[in-house]
Length: 455
Image (tube, rainbow, N blue to C red; front, top):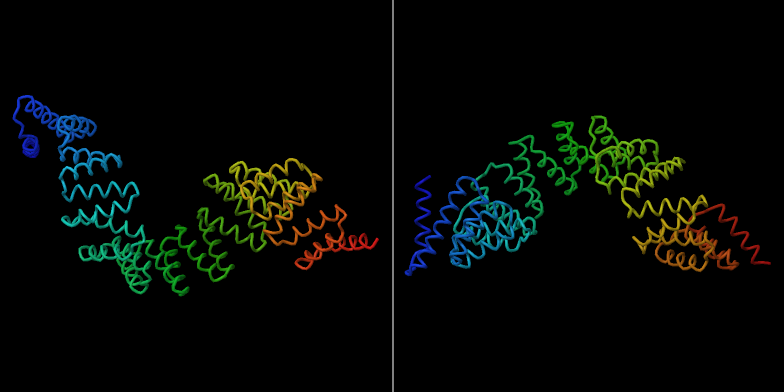
């Protein structure tokens, strides 16, 4: 240890020497003293103290590239990436164009997400340095930026040195998949699984590869292997249900997700997907059961808002109006900008012909969030109809029908014209609506309008 420190001191002394006057020599001696104290603190693990002494030395000798390099290393170690970039660039500018400076500068840029400069400096540093860790990082940058050919080049080099490293093989297979070299990727994924049967991501990506190549049976086979490998891991169930859904095999997807839930898996995505499948099949009681489980799980607030919304819709389908309102209000509580919940609750009040002012306020909020949503504009127009503001009713309903050719909007426009005693237009819109969706009540109103028109 003493020999190492002495060598560094001598090196610095040589760097700082060459000054002839007494005052300059005193200054250089002080710089050397600060540097030695910096080294001592660094060896003892006092990084802050080392940083302070190196900074003091630098003030006395501002053109010393090595001091900038030392400060850059400390900044990098402390994850202060912007100061690290500044220090390494200055060190290089002052002539320290060594590979370590370029490599560490590249790492600092990488941490900041500046992949262009990270790649440039890592490439420069690797010209005189064969460090594999930096090659892995550089390859990762090329993957992130979609430069798969360059990434493949570095992984090919790495595999010559580490031919059986499962992580390097896995990343290489990912690149081959991106380049649509599926057969080669398949071979490597199988090699990984043979050497490490518990490498979960290899099973996942091999299954996805087969699904992408329209080989669903092989995809399902590896999902089932993953499930048998670890029945408590949710990934295999999720992936297998996804493959069934791409084949439009709803019942098979439902069965595998049910199996996952029975196995005690509480993965939110599995519970939600199962609940939504029940909802789509109009199995509302079963859907409600899954969504009630879902809202008890620790989820982000926006996700909870979405789940409460669907729980509200399901309750409405079951005729549980009070529960629907409770869940919709919960949805809005968790996310005041959940436009679906705002519109749904507001329109529910309009259907009941209650709390019209409150309904108008809720629907206005939804429209503010999505001003070009035809369904929301229809709700707003209908709210103004309930308020007997027919000018605004007409404005919003006609805007809505331009955006969304829906029979219910046509029915509302028909009611507006009927109210305005423009029976010809009322008949026109109701007939359009009936052509799209038969509605006995609208048929009844249509006949009334025709009688009115004949008088």
